[in-house]
Length: 304
Picture 1: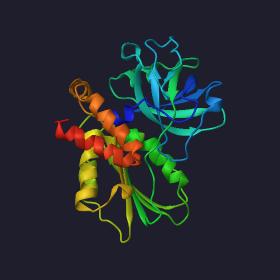
Picture 2: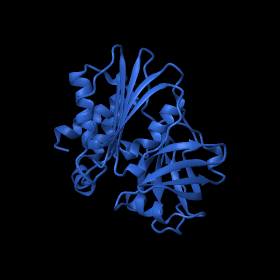
Picture 3: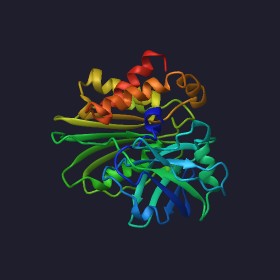
Picture 4: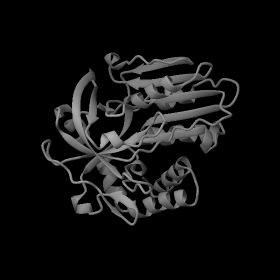
């Protein structure tokens, strides 16, 4: 996922974090596990309505460890000592009730989150951040193009469930195995295109080519993309440079990154500057999408 999505600087109102207890774990498909979280802190969780509602999940060093709560420093909630900061990844909230919060984990071959999800059982604990989101359809949009690899399936599912009768959307989804297909409930006019056996860290993605060849309907469109960070940058360039979409009509988010360890080693040199620019853009009144674009442009200038 994009480093911009790894911010643990959640600055607005309490509560600033949510210790969460596993209620159940269910294998949805060969590549995905659904974890339902509960606990007293989840009962006071303050969510957002956007379908790509995203929380940072902080993982303990071992399955049976319990992380301390985050602390607040100058209005910022987080684990402020870098030496003690737990591993974390960002995930979409697939659904929630008054007492539970559900997250679908993609089972990459390696990785902290995938290893934790495979071993998760009732009673295991993590800590969740406050949520944020990027999906915002402008009022003038006549149609939507929703594009994602497997990491974006939960957000796409929620988006389709929330569409109203008469809304129009085309969906392009890239999965590793035909058994990873999901059924989505929707009241809208929706077409779904499945790309099977490509991308998702196994082979080069086919999503960029699919967006390039997409025949746009008449009227004003809105593009939402979630997937590998390099593909996200390429899709954003198509929408902005070739389609003429502004930031209100294009939300392209990097949910994860190829060769992440190599990239992170380089990113460390520029992290403070990049995050300072991202937060400054938000303070100056720019949207999260605009701040994200500035963040990505800075990284591209330094070769990341």
